[in-house]
Image (cartoon, rainbow, N blue to C red):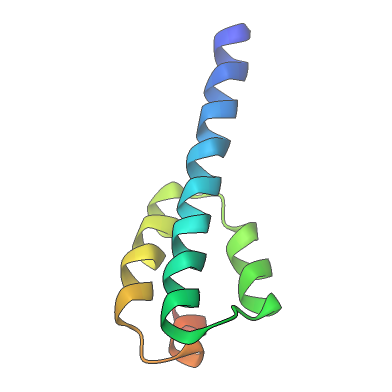
Length: 70
């Protein structure tokens, strides 16, 4: 039971760290991240999907293109 709880906490920490990485890249490239993008990213609970978005955040030309990746 305890190991399951710790695993869940660690997984949520990884998800949150990846979300913050995405936001930092988008902010550095395009300034403030729109709320609709933040809301969409916050709903993603698949670490693999967040990792893909993290990579794409480096290459998209604008927020519109990033939205298409969501």
